[in-house]
Image (cartoon, rainbow, N blue to C red; front, side, top):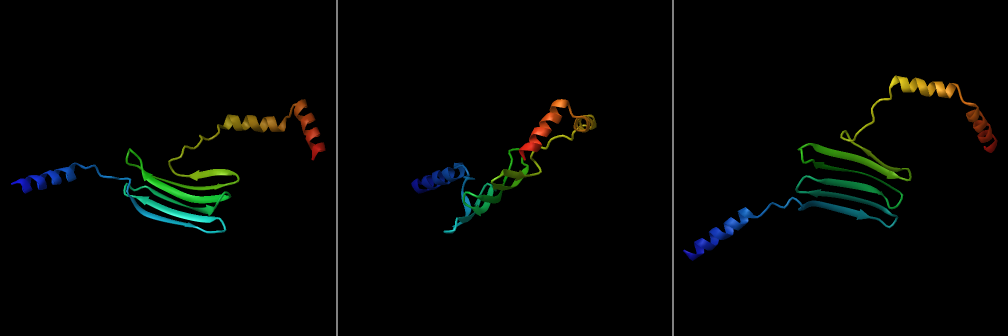
Amino acid sequence: MYKLLVVVALFGCALAAPLNDDTITKFLANQDTDGTYAYDIEQASGIQIKEEGLAGHEARGSYSYISPEGIPVQVVYTADEYGFHPQSDLLPTPPPIPEEILRSIRYIQEHPTPEELADRAVRAQQI
């Protein structure tokens, strides 16, 4: 009877234990002496991270996960001397520029003020 109680208690503890989604299921890493590197990591929760590059100069990679709303998210990116450049369908994009604003910009470019003309003359001499 005592053994049955212990077995049932252990079984109950096993069922009550939370599932650990942070478990790493894949870990590949490589770093060479010339500064190039690559890594590929996956977790049980579905998170995937991949990157390769030249240390301190450039990187390209991707990461993906499932959002709290259940939407799969994937981001592909590059990073270099010009910054971090992510690409994803879920990143916000600016709205289109209204036609009235585009016309205003064209008018300003075609009809510079006297100050703008003087500034252009100074800049032309600097080059």
